[in-house]
Image 1 (cartoon, rainbow over the protein chains, first blue to last red):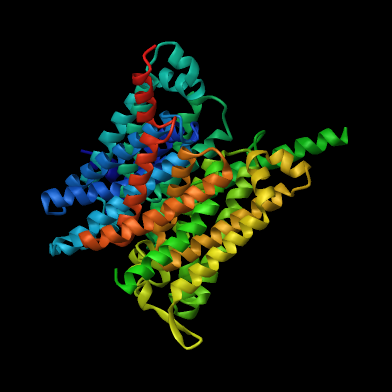
Image 2 (cartoon, helix red, strand yellow):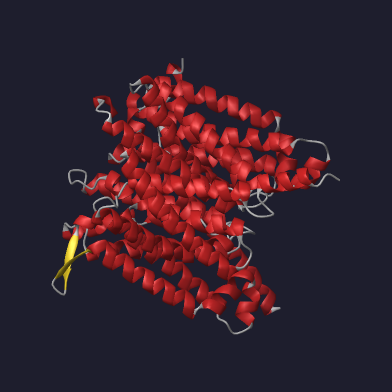
Length: 295
Length: 292
């Protein structure tokens, strides 16, 4: 299906699969990242990624085998449940986002541990390596993984595109949006559902724990360069895709795991952007302050 | 309860005391996720020390881990104070980068050696009573000495810095202008959190770090309104989770950190639903009882 794209790249077939896969994940994560970062929920991905452990364990308990699609489905469901729990806690008005995230993270992680302990004691020999499932391995990607990632990513971006105006007003002025008659909880639920999807997409390539960085770093980079949400989303997606592709190639050449290389690359780009961006960068601000003093 | 059971409850209880004290201030300062970030960020420190000395559980390991924990909070604090990125985004930028470095170091130089990511992430309190050191002729569990010391140091720190800590938590500007050294207190708190997280990491595993820092403090926040009472309630919740979790783990024959976390979760849920006046169910019940 995407064979022509893989052939067109000047890379060997396995390298091309990795690069296209990481670029797709990078783009989707970068484009969806603003949903988290602009609402002070950058660490959402952290709790969701820890939450996937319980879902993987339950999926394994139900089926008794390590079928990748089933485990991923379990991971998606539990990541989404964790996300909804966080929103629900926040909406009670009794906890701030960071504490809500921490509570959900702690409970879902310990639940995962208890389930895994139970599985380890059950004597099923297939269970080995379940917990390393969350660390990700881009080298193990197949063409089928990429097609799946492309399909899910395209669906997520389509939802974002259709609901863009709603998302924009709910992000910047939740009060007005709810007064205007929009059920903000529905927007909240939809946008966290998309984030859960992005986290799960990343599980296979960069690993669940490192997905936090891929959701946040491109957004921070792009935010330094633009003020408009309609530019921020594609720009941050492009930054994510570029980091994913370059990181994928570099890690293949150096025989290193792709996830950490991509994350370090994305973080470096974000720090450069924070420091040197025109207007909003640290250097630009210092220079402005100096000229003001000089006058 | 066997002596080992009592020892586990005491070790986790002591640790939860220290974590609940610092965690309460973190929750009030909206930095509740800092310990979780630190527990990931220490990985390169552990690996580097292993590569240099070949040891996995020595004093050097704790020092190396602490160095990277402090690097994590320092990077977070710097990014946050630039005012360019939010405090949540700053944290989400710093710790995955450090964690990545750790994984790269492992896969590059130590893939043959058994630095299990598992044992880094799933470190367990279960065997804590068995690892003993000799003090004055008696065998004492190493974890008991370390957590006891850490708890004592934390209580001392919070008592000494009580006024500045409170002031800088609720009104940073006042703390700075009023001569209470808000910035300095902030940095001391961050370094103390990093150090305590590493100690907890070393003796009971990373899972309980985030649980003990966040859960008791959040539960207490739901129940009371004053900082002093909040600290007391948080410590009580910590001990209750430690005791209940250990008992449940023995009854159901499962992971101790897991059940302690779930017990803390259950206590949190109870507080959320039934807290006096503000609980979700309490509010509904009062409304039912007094029809308008």
